[in-house]
Length: 106
Image 1 (cartoon, rainbow, N blue to C red):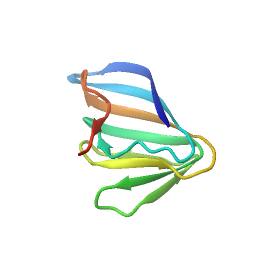
Image 2: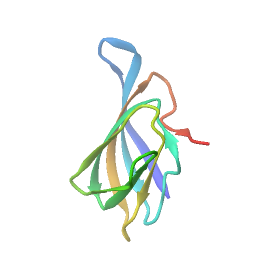
Image 3: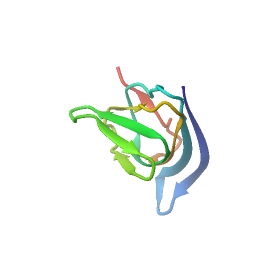
């Protein structure tokens, strides 16, 4: 239900240990990422639809097309498409070099 397509993976200038990854993320209606974290920060803009962010220790938050959000390194969260149509986001990750984008949460 969630498909992330990396569009760019590039070294961070002046920091050989980290890289930037830009991805197009499509969420089918009702789809969820499942609980997970990232080995770095995620900055995302919702391009279409409406998502709900469920971040551990915080109340759920809705993010609509034209709005942006940030998930900090290591924070466990889940993103859910709460709409009846596909949702799309552009996500930029600043992560440890060669790391997986997603770390599943127990």
